[in-house]
Image 1 (cartoon, helix red, strand yellow):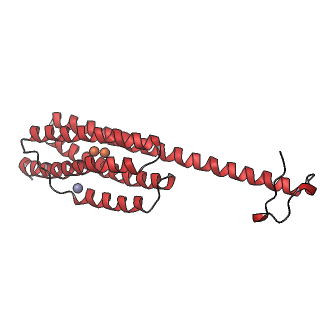
Image 2 (cartoon, helix red, strand yellow):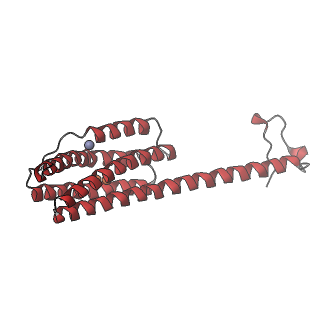
Image 3 (spheres, helix red, strand yellow):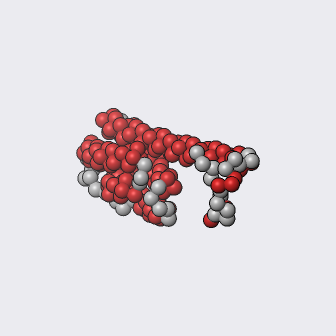
Length: 201
Ligand code: FE
Ligand code: ZN
Ligand code: FE
């Protein structure tokens, strides 16, 4: 194995992730539009501009390696985005769709993290320290995006749980009211639709 073959491998990998990032610059705003949760919308929008920066950084890396900045269709990213869109479109706008968007976006971030990890290691082997630094910056940004998505997911889960608990509390209260001998029984209308009786407050 020569330095040259390693360098060729590096360029191949760069072309793949370069195309993947460009796909994302187009896809992320669409996901942001489909999202409802404000933190999620904000995270996706912000990561769009971060991604634009990553494209620029890759162009710098191409420069360091001495190869033209040229992408090669990344089928992996294409597949992740297609599958993600499919799941997202199955849900109406709201919590469930937001969670589907997060699931898709996190798969994307993990794909990128693995790609950058591999490329950074290759660049280290080739003593391209400036490239290593650039690649590391992007890798950090991907990790940050991933953990931010986890935070949003947790906040959605927690608010959903809270709502469930409130519903349960209300149900319990209603049951208690029904158990009590109702003092307003005489004024209650009988046979109301749904059979639910309300005590006057
Ligand atoms: Fe990226
Ligand atoms: Zn790829
Ligand atoms: Fe990313």
